[in-house]
Structure formats: structure tokens, C-alpha cells
Image 1 (cartoon, rainbow over the protein chains, first blue to last red):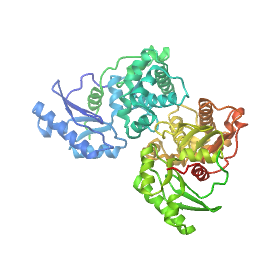
Image 2 (image 1 turned 90 degrees about the horizontal axis):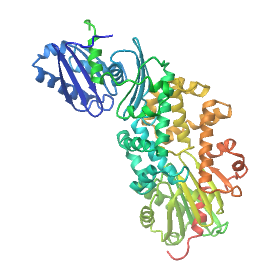
Image 3 (image 1 turned 135 degrees about the horizontal axis):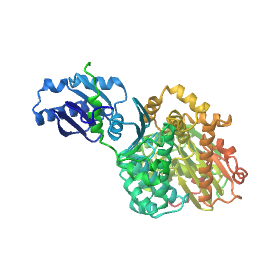
Image 4 (image 1 turned 90 degrees about the vertical axis):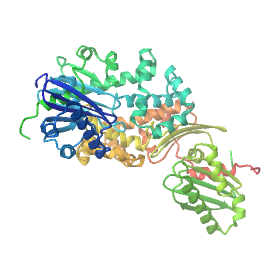
Amino acid sequence: MQDSTPNNVIGVDGGGTSCRAALVLDGQRHEVQAGAANATTDLDGTIRTLRDALAQLRGATGISGDRLQALPAYLGLAGVLDPRTGDRIAAALNLSRAQVGDDRRTTVTGALGGGDGAVAGLGTGSFMARQTGDRLRLIGGYGLTMGDEASGAWLGRGLLSHTLHALDGLIPHCPLTDAIAAEFGDAVEIVRFASTAGAADFAGLAPRVIAAAENGDATALTLMRAGARYVEQGLHAMGWQPAEPVCLTGGVGPHYAPYLADDIANALRDPAGTALDGALRLAAGIGDAP
Amino acid sequence: MQDSTPNNVIGVDGGGTSCRAALVLDGQRHEVQAGAANATTDLDGTIRTLRDALAQLRGATGISGDRLQALPAYLGLAGVLDPRTGDRIAAALNLSRAQVGDDRRTTVTGALGGGDGAVAGLGTGSFMARQTGDRLRLIGGYGLTMGDEASGAWLGRGLLSHTLHALDGLIPHCPLTDAIAAEFGDAVEIVRFASTAGAADFAGLAPRVIAAAENGDATALTLMRAGARYVEQGLHAMGWQPAEPVCLTGGVGPHYAPYLADDIANALRDPAGTALDGALRLAAGIGDAP
């Protein structure tokens, strides 16, 4: 467990949409925001974004470049799937004591406040994790084509697929599929949308599913319950025990609470902090030797 | 019902991989093969392919261009989703009595020999159809993102998804998921493959699922049974009655026979003909007036 108030460290939470960076300096926390940072889809752009964020931190604090680059820094970035990518990024930034990992570790550390427990990260995509001591187990997070079960994109795509099934007469109509069918006009328009939609486009429909389920819509309930079953399966597959806290993070996560089994519902805790808090906490754990 | 031996007609069966065309002239059938013909993804290329096919038919038979262009012609082409696209193609080819539709109608007419019944077209993609008199009802066929349930691509993607679930501990390992996991090496390599794979790439794994199911593999049986349930659901949604024949077409179709409910299994018939046969049959039904 690290100190609860890390000092003189840099933390970065970088996602596909935007990037947040924080510098804790002499007891004061300074926070800035920059552009997108997905290391898989755009490594050069990610490095530019991070340089921008570091420059903003210098501007906000007046810290010298030399001192900044010598501070412990933890960067949790979307799409960092192998250590080499992380090393390239740290080198490009001249950060001498930086560690770069993917944004799942920072999310988990932030949500659990550095302690043990499980996290279901359910935003546009999804992943699950369990932290026990130094061991972090991660499952899922394979992208929408292969799954991202229970994610916002999975809910939205599922809604469109159920709407097509209702139009085909495979399942009964319900208010939500009726509404979606009316908005698109016909099956061809749904297929056209889906043929160019990315995960974020599908995830844009997730709030419709969440709201309809609260009103008892059959299709929406089917989807939310199927997502909840995935979360339950995942927790048990990772060896989660009822004494361990469970955090539901991401835009969709907390909305699954009513659909989870009692033992899990009883273990739910609000996240202790954000992924940026997690990055600062992980930075505080970086030793002196590079 | 049309004549069983249509005369002086042109038929075309065009798919994303290749295109077959036939000319029945004075009782003799001439057949040629040309390139890809997917009207949605490449309309100009499709028109070039069709010109090539017609030129080949002229070369094979010595028929004049004027006579050829006056013959009734039915073109069943992948990706013709609206009448305007069909009209553009017919105009570009100077065929005065041509009808252009998608390749599902030709498949159904060919498989059922022009009679009534149901067809489950299960190849790389999937669709289902029921012909009763002049009425053709079509369901499914929405592409892999939205479904294409029971198709070869759906089986292959399902196999990879189940392999990831087995690696995550969500479901038990079985010989097939073990083999796939060993071949790819790890989850990251499966995700990498899936991120660029098209429907045909996923469908390349379908024979593994079919063969493993025959050997009792649990995951393969789960997938084949789920595909069979979709076929059963689809038949009932279309109003299929046990007296009507059912044809399983496409590379995957016939392999579902052992997994279907008894009433459907008892109704199975070998397809009477191919989609090209269907195109010739539909051409024979085109009236004199354009």
C-alpha cells in the first residue's frame, strides 16, 4: 500500500478521447487536460499529446524541465499492450523515472484506493480485474468484435440486433425495439448504420437501454441481465470472495448494480478515486533506481 | 411455376468472390465464369465483370450482341439492396429485358426448383427465406456485425470468443479451444487476428467447429446447437409448416442437419438446383414487355 497522499509525482490517465495529467508538487496537486492518447491507433499523436500535457504542467507550476523529468511518473494509456511501446513513449518524453502501462491498471488502483478487491470497468468497452496484494488479474477487454461483454458498445449493438430480430419476428416487439425501428425506418438503415459504426457509435445507444430497463422494457432487461451475468461470471472466474469490495466503474458500470446477485450487490463500493488518482498512487510506488 | 427447362434466357449468379453466368440457347446451356460481383462494395467492378461474362457467352455461342441483349435475363447479385442499383446495372449492360435482384432470390428459386418451401442459406454469411406461391419472405442476412447467425463467419468468430472465455476461466477448456489457444499463442494474438479479420477469415475456422462437433467437443456442440436454434426460430418466425420442404444451402448449411428438431429434420430436401439454375428459372418468368 502506498501513501494516501503521494508527493512530487506525475500521473497520467490517457484515453482515446482525451488525456488528463496531474503533478503533485510540494503537497499541491495541479491538473491539466490534453488531447487523445491511444498508443495503438496513433503512437506519434499520443507522444505529442503527452508533451503538450507536460508543458502545461510546467506552465501551471513553474517547475524546471530538468526537475520535472526526474520525478517519478506513471502513465496509464489506452492501447499500451506491450512493454516496448511503453519504453518508446517514456524515452520520447525524456522522463527518467517513468513507467507506462495500459489504463486498466490505473483504473483499478484508483478505484480500489490501492487496496484489494475487484473492478468491473464498463464504459464504451469493458474489462474486469481483481487485485490481491501485488497480483493484478485482468480478464476481458478484447474489443467489441470479440466481446467487450456488458460494455456500452455491446449494449448498443445488442439493442440493434434485437431490433432486427423483432422486425424478423424472431422475438416479440417491445417499446424500445419499436422506437428504434421507427427512428431508423427499416432494417436496411440499421444495417447501414452498423456497417460504419465504431464502438463509440454503438455505445451512444446504451443510455436508451439503461433507461428502458428501469421502466421494465423486456429487451432492455434481457440485455442488462445478460451483461450482469457476464460481470458475475467474470468475478467468480477471477476468484473473487464476498469479503472483497467490488467497484463498478465507467459510464455504464454503476447502472448494472440492480441486476447483480445479492452477494455481489452487498460488496459494491463507490470507487475511491479515478484512474488519474491511480496513476499518482502508482507513481508514488516507483523506486529511486530507474 | 415456370417451365423446368427454360429456353433462350440468360441467368447470372454473382457473388463477392466470383460470378457465374449461363445462356440457354435453342435447348443448349452454355456456362461461363467471371470475377467478383458485389454491387455494394464495387459497382463499377461489378459492371465490368458482367460485361466480361456476357462477352464470354457471345464467344461461346456466336450469338449476336443484338439478340443477346434482347433476351430475358435475370441477374442475382450480392449486395443489390435497392431497385435503383439494379436498374443502373441493367442500363449499363444494354439488356432490354433484364431484372436484377440480390442473390438470395436466385438461391431460393434454385434450391426449391421454383416451388414452395423454406431455405436456410448458411455460407460465409446467412439468411433465411420462405417461398409460398408468389410471396418470398426473407429474414436475416444483415452481416456479421449485426448477426449473420449460424453462418460460417459466426461460427468462426464464436469459436475465437469462446477460446478467450476459456482463457479467462469463464467456461471450461475443451479440446477445440485448447487447440485454437495453442495455435494463436495467447489472447493478444487472437484479438490481433480479429481486429483485421473479415467475414471470410472468420468463416475459415468454421470447418474446425463442424468437425469438432462431430467428435463431441463441448464448445463446438454449443455453437452448432445455437446455430440450429436460430434456424428453427427463423423457420417458425416465417410461418413454416411441416409439410413444406426445407433446404439447407451454402457451405455450412447441410452440416446443421443433425442438430435440428425432428419435424424440421424430416422436412429436409436436397436443393433442386443452384442459384444459377434459379436465375435461369426467374429469367424464364420475365414477360415480353420491358
